[in-house]
Image (tube, rainbow, N blue to C red):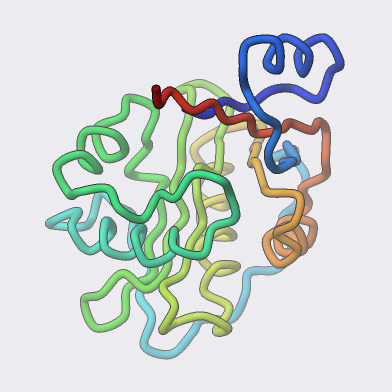
Length: 195
């Protein structure tokens, strides 16, 4: 089991008293969607941007998520979830906004994606931005993230938040370039329940 714990001494002590071990640090980042966005990245030849709502079948997004998750920093591996569990856990979650979730498609394969979670009122959250290994270093993460922010702004959302591993310099740099700034820190804590 793992939990995210705010970087406040009382919260950290509470987790440790209950048998959780400290893991990696994360940064919570915020962006005011009323502020102008940086210029859109240039289109990438052969790449179509769609929303997840446009996908006739979510399986290509599942496959891209598994591939991208293999390299995501963290203590808990997320690359072994079966398709039925992924549908129940991620695709069917009530705060997933499929219209704002952006996918970059190359030859009918989801090459990159930006998951959008919303409260349905004014807050947009980047749940995960990922690129399949075969498509990295082409600017696709920036492309889907910028498109998601643009869509969120047009839909009337006022703020954007995201959470990044403190050691993920590439994603922290991408988010800083999109106008996010750090507002809080959290630690991941883990507890084993094996007897």
